[in-house]
Length: 118
Image (cartoon, rainbow, N blue to C red; front, side):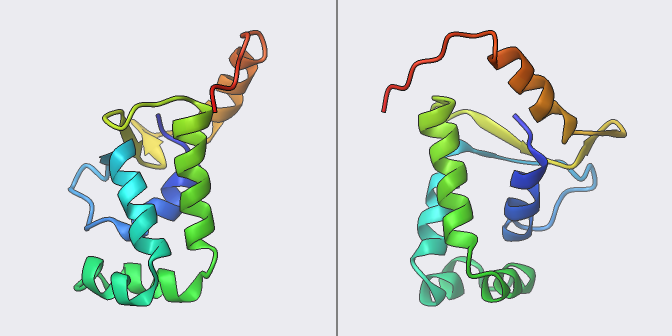
């Protein structure tokens, strides 16, 4: 699963990308990331020491806790993805912008019968 909005928020918090530019994490990793971000500046210093980009992002955007909590809830409760589900963090794949995928996915979901298990 790859979503551009997720990439914009998550990528600055990850270690530097490999030469492929693609990074991944699991839903469970996103859960822990959200917990660490929501724990505040003292936790940031521990988790992101040596990652000035992450620290700058967190200090400049007070909504990070909200964003990551929303993403985690959407993936876990909304899409019912398990903690071990891998997420791709990328804007493009083989030169194709990934942002369109959400619209295509929503079109498919409109025809599906969904139930909330929360």
